[in-house]
Amino acid sequence: MSAPRRPTDPSGLERYYVLTGGRSGPGGSASSLDVATLIVSLAAPVPGMQHEHEEILRRCRDPLSVAELGAHLGLPFNILAVLLTDLLEAGRVEARDPIPAHGVGRGPDLALLEEVLSGLERL
Image (cartoon, rainbow, N blue to C red; front, side):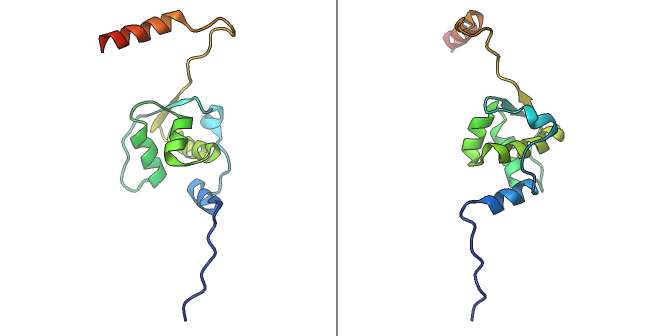
């Protein structure tokens, strides 16, 4: 006779609880994160790190938005924000705010567009 099977959690909530150590939201330095915040790795993964932390460090060698990172990892924003809090507090990643709009209704920043065009022409 085999042991009774434990029901699986189809919602993934049990997995998220384990990933975050029971924390439900970011605190401290990550409380200002939003989906457009860019994350960039400052360190390489080390042996023994949590798998998701390793993946964040690998994927963010070049700046990546929180939204893109969440899509790649298949994690909801609040779970990802908790993981990013760990890495921010350890100094392993840096959070960069997106370039703010200079004024509502004024249109795009022409200086920035000229820099982008110049960079594309050099390619």
